Amino acid sequence: MVDFSFELGSFITILDYLGTIAFAVTGASKAIAHRADIFGIIVLATVVGVAGGITRDVTFGRFPNAFSDPIYIGLTVAVGIVMFFLYRKLQKRMGTWLVFDAVGLGVF
Image (cartoon, rainbow, N blue to C red; front, side, top):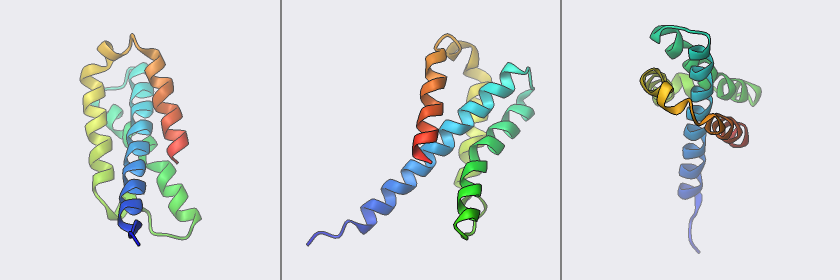
């Protein structure tokens, strides 16, 4: 019999990262829409990106992954920086924001 436990765990971790990125994009776009500077964009991307996962973990009585694994903060900071520089180019595709938001909601 094939052991799928490792593959399933990796798949769930990847989905968690994708959800974090999706919500970070949403947070960064809102910060940019409110004319925040790069620091504000990174802060809002980070808060929005990890808040759902922290809430989920606390609800289930687990220590939040965002505090134990630095990749979550790294991903949200990277998304904030990328959005700061590429927002104007990506702004024309507003449907993309809806897709990111839907992906984030679906993954979490």
